[in-house]
Length: 444
Image (tube, rainbow, N blue to C red):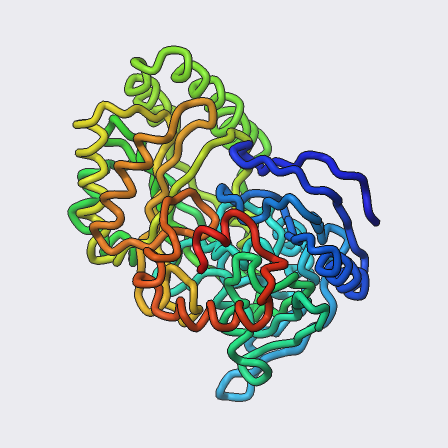
């Protein structure tokens, strides 16, 4: 279906685009037709999912393609371990499938994605293409779970790639920031369905900085949120349990209080107060930190990984070597105290296993992800500039879907397979049909 042009904006409102046309194909053939038609007219094409990227990765002045009508599971192939027993499945999923819909579909099949981020509104293709990750020292990001991809190239060719077929295209497309083509479906390696026992409780930044690596390995999936201008953090440790474990989810009342009121409606009010009177931000952060109490619960993995996020913000996130994480966070704390910049938003600290994805921020090394946030009505510029200086000094790598100032010249020396990726991109899209202002900045 093709509709007249209308302005498009991302989730947080910091990116606005004016495409000349929007289209929502229902088949791969319709995707191909849209790409060929745009290329013949000399018009650029971009694909958009939930628009949750904080960069202009999906923005275009050409044709904007939504894959919201290409959803669901296409096929399932069981996988087996060295002992010959079934240990999961390779599941082929249409690219527009939202993660919050995929979780229940997989659960009903006795399967789960091995790890997820904390926001479930993303499309599968969008999450993979920008390097979405969760947390856990033994858990790589979403692109590392992909074992097959189908994409439509600039000339309309439909390419099915994997480690065995077009391996260079596969290596690039697992995290391609939309620069290689339109992904129409992908095959992800899933594991048997599992539950998570969640333990959430207040702690202090001073305590966790004494042994960041120890904290990172203290649970299957460990993370924490730090409230700037205070020493308060909220720790989240998730431990994996069998899928048939006894579930004890958060009650409706507790969810309404903690997840809806305190984390959304109440927190929105706090952020608006900080916008009106920035000087009271430290007091507001102390109040917010005290409002969160300890709780434990057990639920399906996809329900525990993700939380509702309705308070809008800007975000910068870098992956730093895990051994440097404590010093980096300490430097950010000192920078905030010294500079006088203010933010009511907590910073999120997560961890990930090393992987072999070409553009992955965890390529070849175990990392700590440190995410700096600012409420969308407050100026983020100075906070992000100062934080980025600290990240870069620690050999940090920027998340492709979050705000940063790196250019192709910077990235070529930071990313081991940068030139390999560019070679594949030049071959698949020599005329930059899938280009935009973002790819013009981060790719040559």
